[in-house]
Image 1: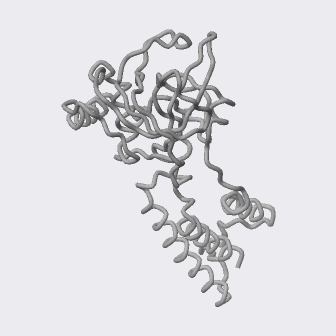
Image 2: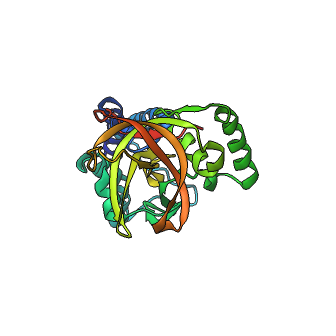
Length: 276
């Protein structure tokens, strides 16, 4: 019966995340099919366990007389606890939208930080989305070359929720190819003061595969001097891409010389996702 409750709990949790719209805070929305697959398998296995419990069937014992299941109560207890942990976390722990508090708490570095999030093999990414860790060098270069064909002839880059991460990755990978091009995009303001200089960035939080490889991505923005902004303000900016020497990193990074700006409301879904 306990197994039925746990498995049906997985089904109900996946359904809740789908209906509530909170699934996109855990995984890339392009992998939504995996949630449907999980729901179907969980429901099927739950029904199997219900049938076994209702029929009173005993655990299978091999002909040699050995039961290879978990025989001791504490072993079963630990197994059930581990299986129930995702349900407890998904049900009782609230989901929150990320904002500049996360950036302020951890700071940011380039291209990735050394801080692990969730999976010790994953790194929190900042500024530049880096998908090279998922490919060998040849395949990654081939993919970047194909993406460049979409944008290299365009003089105006219209960055949307759908292409945000791929455009940012290209701009950081091939900055000289984009210098002088116009760009327009939305994001939230992050202000930082380093080396007695104040810098403004316009960021979006993005998910490449899942929350374990999420990060904050965007560009240094050179706003007009009379632009009143503060952290977490959402802006739409239009400007020209250039290279600017960023003293804290001791290197040049892509930046936007902003020509037009307007305040906007935060989008319903503040995350962007990488398409593959």
